[in-house]
Image (cartoon, rainbow, N blue to C red; front, side, top):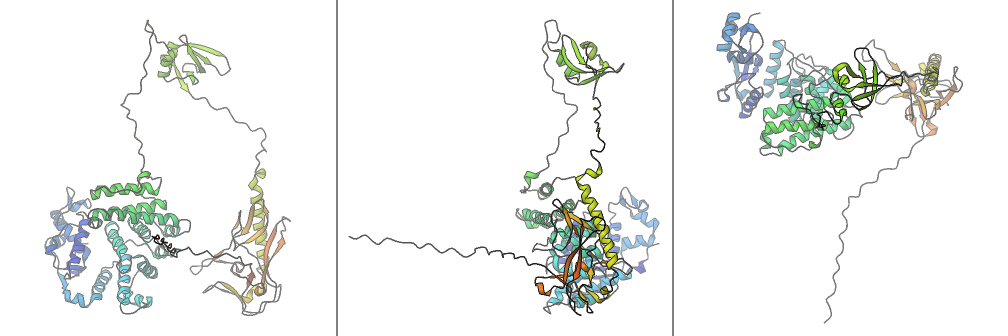
Length: 635
């Protein structure tokens, strides 16, 4: 399809201050010539719509280095003459430009929302979806604007203003809003600025992470340190390398990973603090080269923790990676940067130089020129006392016992000793080999039978327990009393009776798809008896609600019963029945030990465990020691 100038709707605005020029200059410098170059003093307007078209025309007009379409490239550069032969209209636009509609800066100052509206309209007109980070920036900007007028900003009002047009990121909107408010960096979104600038240069503008990813990456975790910089590192990794998914974000928020992730987040902060402490450190931190290096270091560090396939050398620890990043920073800054991780530097294995001579021992000779110790000749040829040797001609073999008197003594496989003249032995007919190991025989084949393994009984009992629990579930699932119960999910999970349930008429089976075993039974689980040694068995709680219509769900009321510390309020109780398959197994059931009234919640008694409160740390100032002075001496 040829270039159509009438389809280009280029809209710009006059620069309002010098900061906009500085930002654009830094952006182009960070691209290292891939976007062409421009004279900041010659800028008359900044693009709102048609930015990508303008950038393409610039790099064509300047004939920058390019290794793409050969029909418009020559000697590794874009070529205008080749473009002219292929598309005359495109050539004219690249050499003479296109028509622009320019807004005066006064209009932009009085109507700040007009600029973003024009940008969104341009995206919709050209059928190009708005980037997720663009949407996040608009959400952040709208919140800041709204917060100047009201104390509590309503998300619905923000959502209404943001979704004036159709957006493909509608499902991700609430989580983008959460991420913008909690992890952008505050009213001055320095983390979001850094991430957006990096993603613009290292990721296609059409790449999207999806609603599920933003849901997981914006999750709250326990504690005051929410490791925002580490979250941004995973976002950059997902955009630039396409190796991070929603599951990786969820894994990063797991309680078992929090300590490591917070340590990595601290390392990312320390990198920047090390540079800031240098001479002209703030200027160095603003340099495009160092910003890019730090962003890549952030990505590789979080990729190392999550074991993602990042194209980087293998490290034994995150501290070793942190030190390598400092080494790179030294080269960029041109100054020495102290590394707190110097002790973790990787020890590079120096490859042996095959051209260097081996260590040669001096030989002691007899007056007649023969070697005093023939064993040295044997060792130089690669033979040692104790090694097995085989004759190439007939396969005769033996083990070297001793070398003396110009002969080598060999012990053969049958135990007999034989001798070979040393000169013949070193003639090249004998070679060292490793004999096959003797076969290991187990005469009693039932010694290690599966049924004799210590874990066999555990697995057998676990399988029997599962079958018995499934049978009980099938039996009691037909209980008519279940129709008199309702399940409440929010604001609190509970089971409420919608009709009267007589005493001992309701039976619930704690049936799950997982029967686990271990040394200690969790508090919210129902134990299956007996324990085998120190190993206990329990039915693990499980609640799976369908996310979409038609999906399967798994909701067992037994796992949603509330607990109470007041015995009089409890209406359910755990009792045990014997297994039909193995009499020693006792299976848990829940029965209503008293009548359950309409509107009453099901609850079970649980003894309260008294936990002594943690004493407050002593923070009061110590009383000053009273100074005593002696009375003046009597005259």
